[in-house]
Image (tube, rainbow, N blue to C red):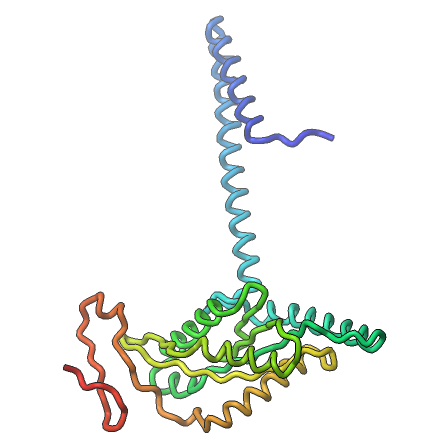
Length: 273
């Protein structure tokens, strides 16, 4: 099998051609010398061009790979990247369930899906504009990606809905409560920026344990149903007014912009000094 030519081989061949050209020149064979030099220069130029094309191809392939699993707005995985992992988790739970039926050995490692929905998304979009809604979605995605552990997967399922595939715990009841509480508290105090002001972020969560008794889509549906119950307990947020600002964004202060909070009676916000 022929050996692949490396960049070092090209450099060595080009150097040798230049040396041969020098020898021809010393003997007065100027045409041959010029041919050797031109050939060497052409080899070097072609090699440089090929290296650049290969590097660009690698960058393009890496970008395509990233785009194939990443939500373009938030930079976290999208539904298409999340579902194969959920399928894997369900299949593992089914095997563990079958083994339990045969041996009586209980499952010690549970996995679950936690479904997350942004409260008041429609009022933000309708009352403040879609740019504000996009900022809200990005803030939630960023906090979520900072919160999940290395062995967990978070994704934007669509719109203002997110999901996390998590694993931990010994019993489903304890596991569910721990997972939901951890993610809910991660969003305490979170704000998003719009037009120089900071607005509060509120989310609702619902979880479903992956026990091998239902398929991947049904696991999502169960976690979505749990989420719906949680949102219903909070009351209707779709028809609520947009949130009031809670502060001035540091970026606005850095730019020296004069932005004041307008407090409505009973809103609980401080009057500007």
